[in-house]
Amino acid sequence: GVVLYINEDIFEKAGKTPPATWDDLRQLAIQLTTKDDQGVVTQSGVALGRTENVDHWQEILGLMMLQNGVSMGNPTGKLAEDALTFFAIFSAVDGVWDVSLPPSTVAFSSGKLAMYFGPSWRAFEIKAQNPGLKFKTVSVPQLPKGNIKEQDVTYATYWAEGVWERSKNKEAAWEFLKFISSRESLEKMYQNAARLRLFGEPYPRVDMAELLTTDKVLGSLVAQAPFAQSWYLASRTFDGPTGINSQINKYFEDAVNAVNARTTAAKALETVAAGVQQVLSQYGLSAQ
Image 1: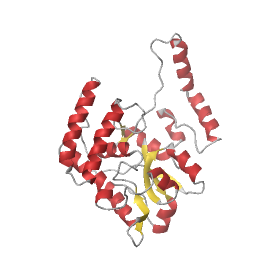
Image 2: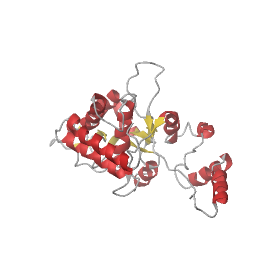
Image 3: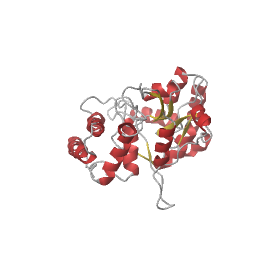
Image 4: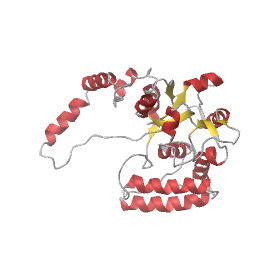
């Protein structure tokens, strides 16, 4: 799942605390962005608003839309327009991020980015690029709640293990999957991996969540897990140009670029909605 990475040094120096809502994040991003005399961003508050250099923009935009109650199979109307406009606003209006900056993972690793959205595994890359960087993750921002019983909404994509239906060794394969997903096996694999890197593979079992709650990177991931939703808007699926994720990503990418070029969100989303419905129908899926 996507979490919010925090540069602890930048936050401590500015006397700030991580944002709880998107409005908090926007104000923080403006306050934590610095520019030189020519208006060039030298430190960005957050990497949002573009598709060219915001890693995992797909999950971030999907998160915003699902939190706002958007029907992803037919992303039209005010709720979808507001989510798309808000994503783009960080570049198009606030100027805290622009196309000239390096990829967001690189920017965060270099210490020039205060807040960065990414999955937990990016922590390995960040640590390798800058071993001295002080960072942690927190849960993603939420919209203000009208009802205290209203649940949070977070976003996750998944890697899943499976067995080929025509395998000659199906029974043995399923037994092996059951073995490696047992509590004992997962603990051993985690401990072995943690000897070589920051942490092991996050436990996929609900009954093991408490083992990771205090981890600086995985704690927020565990806290978010019960509220995670997902959809076909996902990065790094490597499913090729005709794959469902790649096709859907392209429609939303074009929409973000259109809004940054001053096309209205309503107009941009008309094309997205038509394209998404066409792609889903190719795969025999309903837009509902």
